[in-house]
Length: 61
Ligand SMILES: [Zn+2]
Image (tube, rainbow, N blue to C red; front, side, top):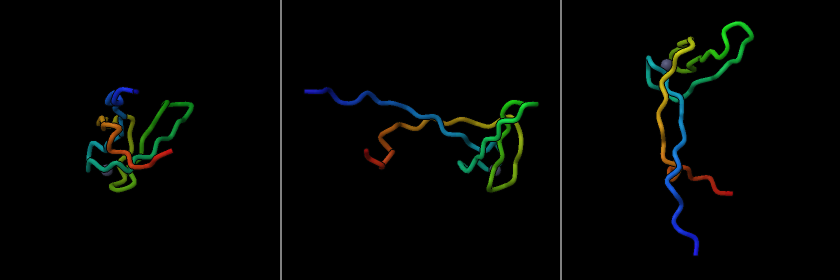
């Protein structure tokens, strides 16, 4: 019998201004990665990361 799944965590990006998860990531040649918040319009190279347990994910295979 397989054991219970180990609690995997998954990092999601959080806007440092409004804490929205709606972050778009752009990769550019000059600055590397920049992030844009679709909710408040924040743009920058710094965003927060939050780790979510994978168990919250509802989508199956
Ligand atoms: Zn925002």
